[in-house]
Image 1 (cartoon, helix red, strand yellow):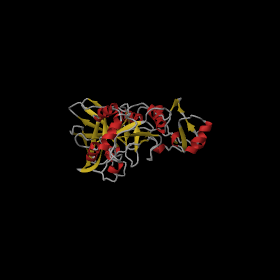
Image 2 (cartoon, one colour):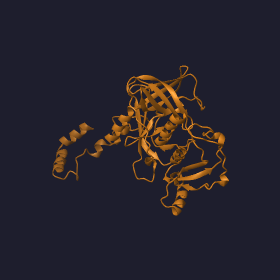
Image 3 (cartoon, rainbow, N blue to C red):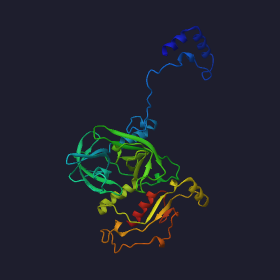
Image 4 (cartoon, rainbow, N blue to C red):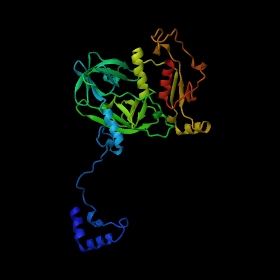
Length: 371
């Protein structure tokens, strides 16, 4: 094709058109090979898209963002590790994790409880061995410290003679407020258990709840693989706003402010304590448009959660026990939904005067009120 272009420009007609091009504004006419010369010509190679959303870790993922975002990603990547678990030398699970603290030679890695649990059971596997793979390729042995199967969180401690980079989860909840007009762009990070194996995927925060049976889980449009489970979710300001799980069409994640409270509970109580409030709620933005239209007529601009179900909280399922350390619990009573002033369809906008916009925030406010 290039040869034909040269031949055309060397011809008399080509010279005439080049002279015409030089004497007219460049935006009104440009020289070109006649269309008959280039039509029906087979391509010299097969075209391949530069960005494939099904591929977790393509190097071009962040090239459409600013260098600042790419730099934040590379800084956070120093804290992202690959993890492998084994039971009696049999491979159990592989995923990612984040070093959130390094103190006195011990690193604290936060990841998914899938790393340590038996398949289809909420139990920790026996004779467990955990390998922690650093970005450089160095492999260290980890030990399981705390596990919570409700939020699917696991804390692994790892000893190191050298300083390990660490970064904490963000406590800020404003990023999840869909009433605010700010960027909802995010980056999911993960790592394989080999040297310099960072994987990233970009996407946006989605205003709806995950399909998983946990109302605190939020969703992003990042497309990751199972190797990204337990890895961090970062906003475009470099903050860790959540920990990722895997789903085929989207990426569920636990918000960072909930992760922080879980880690605090691990330190204070040895487990995560969730007071049962007897309500099942969902973020108002998840409702169907017909419902939102009716709500808007009565409460224009309202933001909060809508009550889906009022149920009897059973003392047997409460994680607050009589005699718990740190608090004095004399008795746990069952309250009837019939005596509750909260009804299905109610919209809740504040708890103790604190505004919120998502179901995840409701849960953390209840935990905060308990503490």
